[in-house]
Length: 384
Image (cartoon, rainbow, N blue to C red; front, side, top):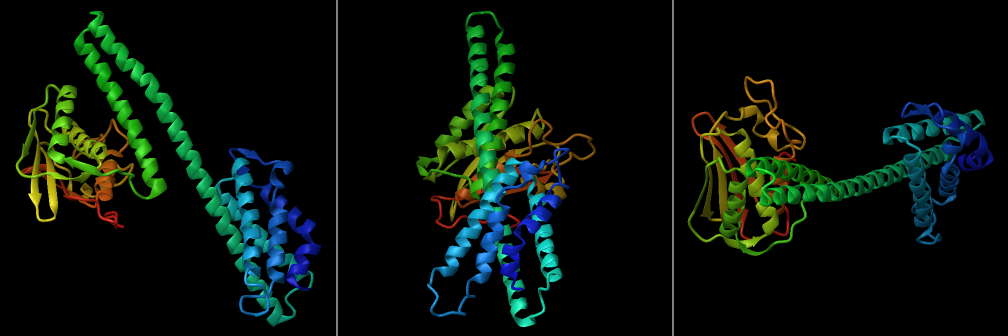
């Protein structure tokens, strides 16, 4: 019996076996009911049968050139819809793949039990093409599932960011109003406003991290600007937030180029926050700008406990936070471990590089090298 004929003649038995296996899979602590499990599996089965009946590539010169493309589109559509329904039903992606594996095994076993495989050359070709079609269906289901997960994550992060920013703005404005009206001491308001800024920073980091994971690159909009002017503004804002800290800006030369000013400000702000959080509180934090042959460069330097050599590259990875030597707490105990990753992605999007050196004698220095204009080809991620 041809495999395509077997798939059509025994569709109900094959689908019943598929459902029986799927029903054994536990999602979120509960079994799936039969009505939820039966979706577009029948369409996948029919599409694979149609695929097997089509002449193989190059096997029939008189076949229309788009014959195989039509079958592929039919199979991809069914597999994509299957992924949608499985995702809505609560199936994890690895569980969906396991389900496909069981379906593949069930089809082959039932076919052999019905007499398939006796005509070796023909049946072997059918079997190879069946596995190719199954791989195509799995690939489409995984791609659709991944895409839907990404979109859901982006939507959730967007809603979260929007809904949290509004009350944060209200808190900040209310604190400032209470100070102006004399009902709240300025020192108390400073603590509230700094907390608002920190929460907003966490939100921005999560949103940016999601964008980078989704698009593969930090989105930027370069415009003509002077990096020294932009950095002077960021330092002025940082001094307001950290009035007890000593910040220095040293620059000499021409720092005009094409940058995304908002991202450059975010980059310096993150590096300053990192230096102020982990540096010695009684030592200055110094920002220095200079020109080099390829464009411009700047560094952020602080004194304090050095970053161990084994951690100096790990700190740029997302959601990785190093341990301070001899301490039981994390270096970024108040953050998500995204700040330096975001810094690296901003620099990479501008075609530059970000490095760190750290020792007890020389302190910790983050150094950024930037071209004056963004190259067409982005700089690859460090370690990739």
